[in-house]
Image (cartoon, rainbow, N blue to C red; front, side, top):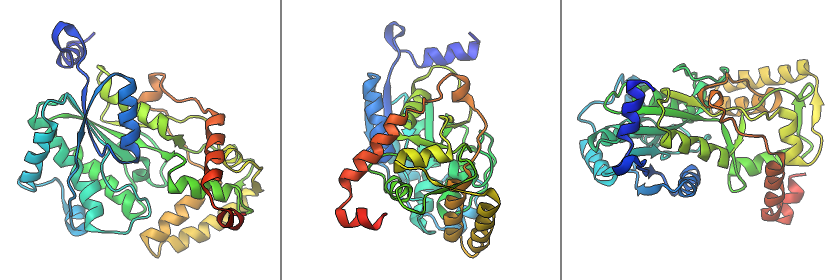
Length: 340
């Protein structure tokens, strides 16, 4: 073990060399935060819930900032530090998770500004590591990887990309940016919408439907985040959720209970080119075009650190089928008819 690795282990160990597992979680009442808290409980960790402040940051400032000014929201940093006191690791799941959200000061305050303020507060209390939950959406149409490169295509993805860029300029604490891919659970509106689509006549894929698509279950996301928080090993600055083997055709079969329509790739590409041209009219239109492209053609990703550690999740088709069954029980009869 290297001297640096040994020092990290010592830093995270308490009396008698027993690991200290006091983890502060911002956004613990949110979709991802609840799953992270549950997973930490399964690991025997002590969870320290932290209330995230509601911040506003004008888009013009977010776009032009090379770094967050040291004196910006100092009171917020101090208040956060009071809540984080005693935590060895801080996990930030807070922010605005709406992928369809329009530009607003609240969007950039929660997704672009807050991560840096949390990092500064974490450094003040001497935390060993901060795990920031970002999104693979920050890389837009690119093949997904663990580089700092981003190509945002919507207000939401732009806010996440700015948040990543600014956080990487902070050097007061070791940070890891975790990029979640497209995460699903029965209570998630996007998942229910996808299930309705998969069960409708509009369910279709390009070609044979074997293209990889980065869709993942919330339990797998929580396990990845908690591992990043609890591991004593050095972690890279950016970590991508590993691929689980899902393909475009299999996703729609599992969620729809039926075979999707197979569209010739040339025809599908013609459709997506038209949508891409329409998407140039606005960021929100571009976001819709990207969703259609993802369903038809999927998206490739480069294997990353978690996969190298042997932590890529299993596909678990039965878990995806349970989503379909659970969603059916929560859909009213008129809505179910309309979805067909």
